[in-house]
Length: 507
Image 1: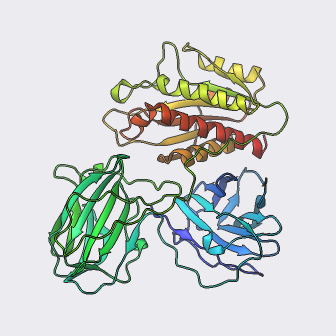
Image 2: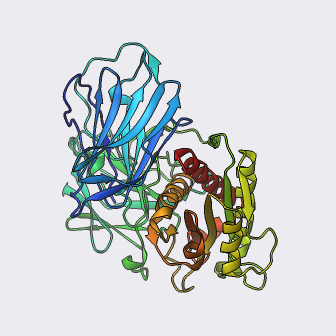
Image 3: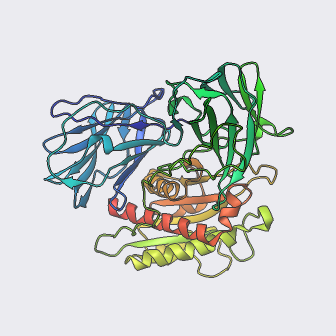
């Protein structure tokens, strides 16, 4: 999956596309499933049911950011959201028969620099528009804008001169990666290391190698084969050397680097088939990390200074939960399984009920703290049949129903990971999409999509209903998270936030 930034240009008249993501146009019309503006982080997130090619621009009088989604229809989503403060309103509409439009309108007197607005492709069907801190004053004049760049990869110090070989690019192959070099390919050295936060890195040093002056971050692989980011840096040595730092995903193997006739190949360890290494989905607002220093420097005249860590683009603090409109709102929370039915059992004998029951209780607490009346289908580890669960929600005349589960597959498939949300009728589609987007934004887990299914509790509930699968107890990536109380708190916050956003959008 490829993720790029869009930059905004400033215009004062008719609409004009100034920059767009290079993604193949979908074969059929997409549907805008969900959008929400988070005032705490100054970020608009929106999701479609298939990949889209957004176009963004900044317009004046009033100052507003316009994001057009070609070949996209407005789905069953909210039409507007009053924000307050520097952002007056965010709204969605059908601009013409083929184009859905999202508009972020600033309050009178506020402006922004268009080059500080970033539109990030999180996934082919999910996007985030990140606004900077907004200030009062006149809008800046238009001018030349930098080209879009990838979100996590970096290329630094590239001159393309003074060395025996030139690094011209990196391509993904059926076996791993090929680092393309012209000239005399050097013998690479590689180290696997980690920092205090248990982030793992593979560091490849290429002596007597410079980086081509026209190499861009976009020319490097994006999230392929469990590698989260490529950092290519030409070192200020004499002659130049190049250090490539790979930030590894949680399930990445310990890669090896070998010289061949075309350059340097990067392969998994012997005995690890490339087909067993899955791609990593791009995290929301991905920020490159600075790797720890390697244990041994390359055989060069001097050791390069460490790369400074860029400032984070988002607060690491959990933003406050949305408020709900005045009036009685009833939400039915259904912790799946219970009693004699523990649900799925996965890695290290992790049971589904050990995961979903504490999440469900915490979601209830968070909603009740926001003034929502919550009806739980069970508050203890007891057996409740499917019809009784639906009856509890129906008798309470709940406004919406959310059933919380954890997924499982064969223990021989630890590569299957991710979250998914289900709905049965169209009345539950927006609820499922809102909850899926909220969970993805909070956790960065793999997106297995929003799907329609005829689950009994969804079919028998008379209100908008969704069933959530918060991860796989059999997944190598998911199981450790599901067993972690801190992660379960994050998931509970995400589910509660999604429910409150759904309520704010209108029941």
